[in-house]
Length: 375
Ligand code: CND
Ligand code: ZN
Figure 1: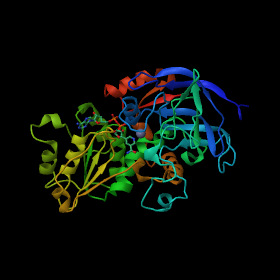
Figure 2: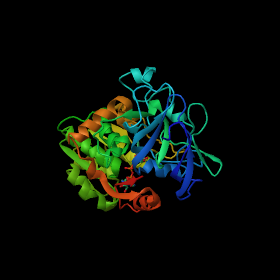
Figure 3: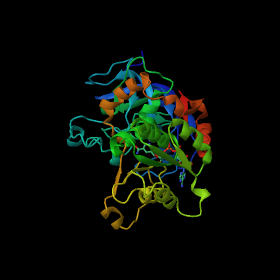
């Protein structure tokens, strides 16, 4: 029985900006009050982890254990933890929910005030870390830190899922799938017969396509500079795909021309300023909605003529697809078990945690959609 004791286990540590992952033995302290220690079973590689390695995210401090898309099993719980016990199958929540604050209680938002997602500093709420390695404190990432055999999260940052949920691919509900799918259903509210364009056909963009399709969109246009992504996009519901490199005019102009004036819904799933502007410029002047899903680098700013909005365009964004994580994730897991959508379609590779650097190489080369690390 490991409850109440320090656990020594394997983790992938990022010692500094730009460094490769280093497999280390780390010590994971027991959970304090209102915290939960989780044995991670499987964790996906998301582009946000790569942004963190590259130093593009403002809240990241090194050394750190990255990873935020996972499924696991509760090992032990700290004092006064309600509704979770050892053995429960769980998904950590990078966008937690206290269920008490003004935002948690407001149906319009899924960003909890109490956990201050945007101000997260890589430590637990008492200001300390639960990880040490070679005598050094290791920072937490996005309330989760999942590239490890064991992690500790706040009770607000974990939710119990059905005990029969697959441990093979359910981790994608922890980020990629839910983020894309919810961006279409919750944030854009795609309507039947509408025309949609998705910039960036990685795990997030493809999950947007799955959402657009379920919402009954009539035309779903995928845009990527890597045409190797087109077959999968079409398999998941894209009706056509565009490679901006095939044209000598701006891709937004191509889309406006091909859609008789612009799309109903444009999604940016890359994280670049240029594709954010291209998405906005592809949207219909009178009623087009643009949703920014991609995460931009910390110093990036966007500039456009405000007149572009005056005629009726909407520009918005969302974190975790607008889902209220704690209450929505268990239902998304049930929907997946009921085959409402197929998570496996987003999985291209599976590797042991030790081969995490190979997984990131696959992401960089454009060969993978989602690589799942089996911990
Ligand atoms: P991934 O790298 O798998 O996909 C990005 C895709 O964009 C690739 O297929 C690229 O080829 C393509 N691309 C690159 N440049 C261009 C371009 N100029 N025009 C068109 N396509 C291009 O990344 P991912 O799907 O894992 O993540 C996508 C973004 O979403 C990334 O910025 C990530 O940080 C962000 C994100 C957001 C959230 C959220 O809650 N909002 C959660 N997780 C990840
Ligand atoms: Zn992510």
